[in-house]
Image (tube, rainbow, N blue to C red; front, side, top):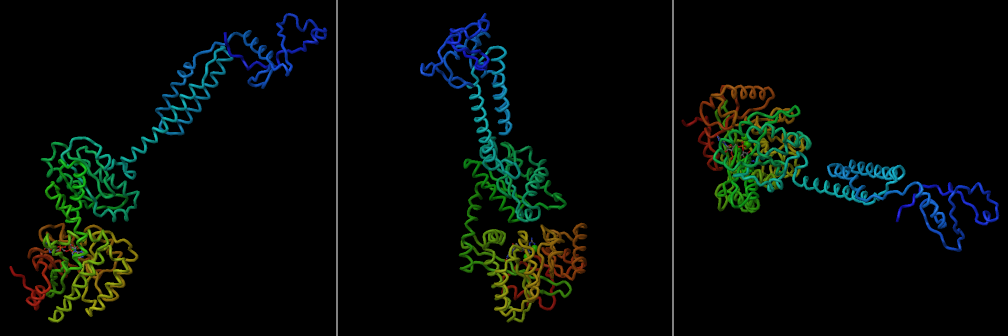
Length: 576
Ligand code: C2E
Ligand code: CA
Ligand code: CA
């Protein structure tokens, strides 16, 4: 029979007597009477010595004494190690369900201590022993595996989610296997402006607010954030036939500004749709993204990329590379749209609008390439090219005794750029054209990047005599905030307010009050996009200073502008 010795027995409590003292009667008989006596050798030389817990190396007879004492107290029952393993199971299950490492470590420490104390107690009170090592090993392995699995799960989850908004990302979209007919992407072309207004953290909240606004038009679709400025979702398998209604419903949700941290944000969006066909979902997402950019650039509400025009959009990306060549080969040219002063009924100015005579794609309007040039570091060269052409044309016009001013569109992004400003001023000076014959129209397709630098640039330009005009007033950020910040000479009320000024009471109120406000600040007002005579007459009644639009003239190439001005030199009469 084998049994474990109870090393808890204190060796000192077992009386010991020298064998020779007993033989020679030096140990009183009553000391030994009624006791069990074990006789054994303790001399080191005999080598009968064993290492034991607590007491180090002791003579074999001591081990026998402890063993005897153990037997007298009752033989402990040795249980299978499985008992401890089973007892630890609830803790193991708990560990598996816990999410944080700190909780797992706490539970492991608590369970290990408990099972250890239980083992001690059961041994001393009930003479039951069982090895707890396997149970502790199982618990440790369980804990390590759970911590590792939690880590892995978290990393995997992060790789499928956008960390700022918590929305699933493109990778998650590609893994989703719901049947769908099309990918829809909504992009925020003015994302940079929103970031500079709200800051990165609030932008994430803003995107969530935008999603809440869109929710009624999304039909519970899962929304993915596919890049900073774009979100996307899928159109159900049978929903493609209702695409137009769905887009109209989206548009309705975006009609009103979103109020966010005290700002009324008029969200401008571009929405792109691409059919999910044999090319797969990834191609459709890219296609929808391209279509969203296309829509945003052209001010369209949405654009469908149905596979046939997808190739055309892809071609557009290569335009940018060709732009450098175009500038070198003078494929870029400028047309002028006359501006009519209503008080004198004379043409006082003309706005320069850039065009690209592309060798294979025909004449491209600025919407096709200006924003791409802005975003890809080509805008300085493009703008200086236009300015150079304008200065040259003004010299030619001066030779025909025409001294109208010319307006050049300057992307807001360029305003604070000292390199641009220096080169533009040098160019103006070298041309001999009086700076007062130039107007810089600040065209806002992006937020002004460094407002302080922009302020200095504007002051420098006005000092030299160049007039500053605020384009597209009333849209985006081109509003009261800009008027407050920047000293301007002219503001151009956006065509969207002007077009119906003669038949829409609200537009009339807005235009009238804007004109009054501007006049009080000593600023001239231009009404843009005037297409019919009633509109022009209403603007005259409202004391608008200048009008521009197809009613007066389409944009004209330089020599046709000269003819147009000469023709209407004394007083301008509209041909009806
Ligand atoms: P914008 O400065 O607001 O220019 C007016 C746009 O409206 C021009 O389009 C013009 O052709 C068009 N337009 C003029 N009158 C009417 C009208 O009565 N009805 C309608 N429906 N449209 C009218 P375009 O030439 O396509 O220019 C689009 C935009 O491209 C311009 O808007 C301007 O923001 C930008 N742009 C044009 N040239 C340049 C340039 O040289 N540099 C920069 N940075 N931007 C430019
Ligand atoms: Ca303009
Ligand atoms: Ca404009």
